[in-house]
Image (cartoon, rainbow, N blue to C red):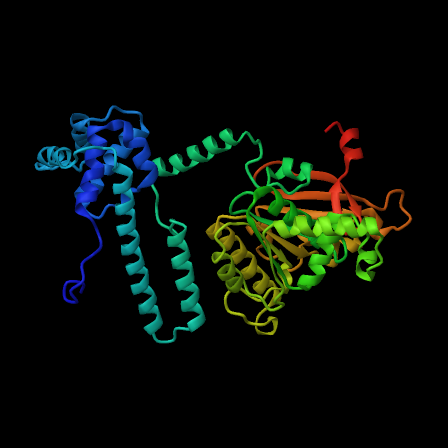
Length: 449
């Protein structure tokens, strides 16, 4: 078809050959090359086979030269009678290996053009299919383009050598950073210790009865993440307005009573603290969407447009419309709808490569128990929520049920599920006047933290 229409598939034979020639002439550059270009980005089959052979040898610490490469090509069964002559030709093509990374950029650019063409063809085909819906095709188009922008794919088998290269690079980067926390900090030390921070692609659920403070703890995490990571934090609030959320964040940041803040009854000192808090929050890149009829597809589309996204917060799961379709609760069972949303949340977190922290309501089941601490089975319309979530945190305050208790502001964040570490109880303090949660330093000292 391309030949008939006078179009030529994008690729650069000379750039591909120059990369391979550089790797053969100067094996010291192989490490830089494999970090910049992938096997699949080579268009010519012979070049792809040679690159994959050298990549495999590099991964195993083998000596690389024309003789050893030819030998390994035989082992990998990609050797041909023309292979020795072709390797000599590759070495003659390259005058110097100095510009090899420039050649890598050319090969990557051509590969991206090919992928864009393939994605465009798929999108066009779907658009003209009988019964296609515009919203579904638009979601496909955005997902495809986002995957290309992120230099990733939405699926496919990947060789273990490439996977290990990614993992080793992550470990090396963490070691150089000198931080023991691989994920984004929540600002609550004991929760960080349990979860190892909020990890890339994690779907974290914070569950409680209404009024327990799940929105407050999520906002604490959002503000801390934005201030410490330097990344964008996206908040999708289906229950509260932007202004209400901003008021809560200002109260927590300035340590000014939320009621006083709403009334505007502030002393000169409090006005100063308010201005300082507003300045600090303005420096943090926090985006808020308060659309009450948000769908997962719409949320994902907005997030894909953010270049430096670090964290997504959703308040809360049961208010979101079902994944992708926008159907109302009346058109489907609540349990099935919430299960669909939960699954799509996890898929979206993995696709975006950022943690999604989502609030969830608990059912009334715990109200009938003597011990009212939350359990996984209390998740409202639980369905697949428990299965999809990487971590589930249940909030509990004795003071919520018994105002006359000894310490009504003592709180527990109960780690009910944790794919990355231990489960158990983390002790916090609830500051109702600031609608915030903080570390319970007294309990930490008593427990020997």
